[in-house]
Image (cartoon, rainbow, N blue to C red; front, side, top):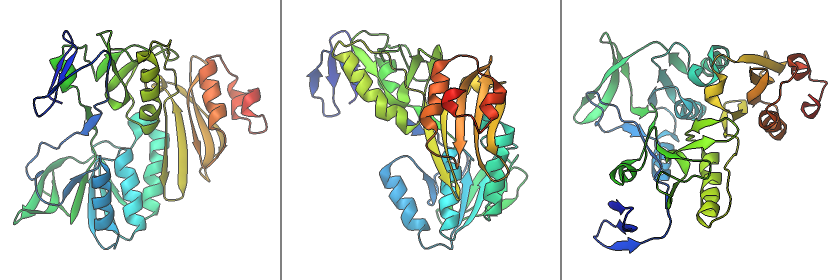
Length: 327
């Protein structure tokens, strides 16, 4: 699709064919943020976004013995690092911030993931800046850090975020700000055009703010909600943002509103030492996010606390003898 005409309610396809529409859903997703450094186009530099990307990496890492360098320690970087190390590869993570995942989880919980990876033989280097990628004969040989040090590599995976694909929306003069701006019914600034998934910056009626979520649960549930709205049904898309990760022997689920956790108070239920606990973020006395680590079948209760939006007693929240439903 190369053109969108909201006034005429027509689409133009790559081959020049045009299609008429009454209501339209934009689910154009996001693209990996590309490195704008020397050597970023060398063979052996990878991004992970599609099924083909995943299958390529699986084939390259399956036999072990490779030197994999990951640029970025977000969820993609940390998950691939865990898998690659389990398969017997040498893994180095390069991160510009002092603690991985701290922008999402805070320093204490981010450090937990850093410790987990180091315990399993991953080399995690923080507070470093990547300058370029070195190569010979068109193929990478290592990653060059600021200051000149070269980290040897057979493969590089870049995981430095994603950019929403808003080109069609911009051409159609829809409101765009960190994605396509939509209301709680996933309706854009044009009454007959809707957006869902990674690309939608949607007003959330519980958080009372706009959120753009790149996690699979948002894409899974947002499309059907938009379809109902497009059929004229009353829709308020209020699913609590959710994601999970499995890394080595740690599995966790996270639900909640990341922007509301900044400056929030952390309350723990369980044993942080053995990495079996639930963490709650409290803002204004109410639970705005929760993360269960190696504790299962509690996510619905955590989401119910978030949805309730009422003040809770931190002491009761931390007391594992009190069911979450009774807090």
